[in-house]
Length: 427
Ligand code: ADP
Image (cartoon, rainbow, N blue to C red):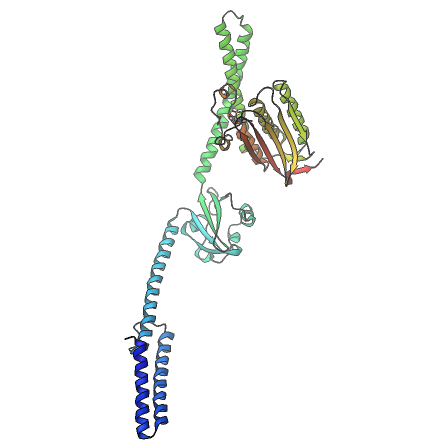
């Protein structure tokens, strides 16, 4: 029998007995009143006991009671017990998470809105110099690097920012921010000192080797020219060997020049000036026309007279490389279109050819150093595989991007997108 039913039957039996006894004794209503009062007082006492137990946190075993109240106590006790178990499990999980983040070799800091520190791991204390007591402090007051403050304010965290460690400026940190939850951000700082050192060593090595190769190559080329001049064409083998040797020496000279240019782009300080890009394009297209087969026609369209802040020599190299490629990788009689125009929020240079095009799988790789698309016909086309890497670097230095659209057999379009803030004169 359910406890509810038992409870009802007991109360009903009590009331019935009161009715019978009261009727026999001629005091029906007082008897009924007394029994009702008794039941009411009993429930009040139970409620008081319950209120006391629950207001004390419902801790420990519940008071001894019977009937429906025992049932109520039991249910609450059970809910509290399972709640306690869940809390314990959760606490254990949080502790394990804290231990794992504490053991992370990278610094991790949780930031609230307003850049306040919510939590930081051990590495953050060692690398960023944060203290336990810094909780609630604004991180920009503790890491006062202008680059970092600008990065945090920008809200654009797609790229990391490079900073020296505030504790030791010989340690280089790569800091990135990840947004999560509502208004929370996770700041991760990784020690990239060794990586940066290796990069500097690689740059120095390439620069030194390229520089050292320059003189012997010039000497070699000079002697080859003299030998070619002295050649009386009596031996075809010798004549061909001289030709081949000269071709290869020139190729190596191009390679060395491109490597030196790349090193300069990576290391040298920017020296910007206002450049008349339409005039520059005019010159390059003229050079391109004479340089390549005359039947190739370069169609130059200048829709805007915009000048740009930048480095003339570098832009010249980039545009010459793009135009040279368009001419190289398209048939002798096809048009190459060069268009300088204003797009939405940008100034664009399109160099479009109707040549052999690039396969979709090769497009993301053509700007890598030394990457050349494998092709029997192309292997005869001279090149170093460094041209587009130079273009990419030059555009990066001008806050511009390179977009490549291409279709095999139809042609390619290389677009350089410059931000409007780079415009120094609209003509
Ligand atoms: P390369 O000296 O070989 O031309 P680049 O870095 O300039 O080196 O170009 C890399 C590769 O991209 C080229 O070898 C070529 O396969 C491909 N490429 C570049 N421009 C074009 C183009 N306009 N049409 C087709 N393929 C191109």
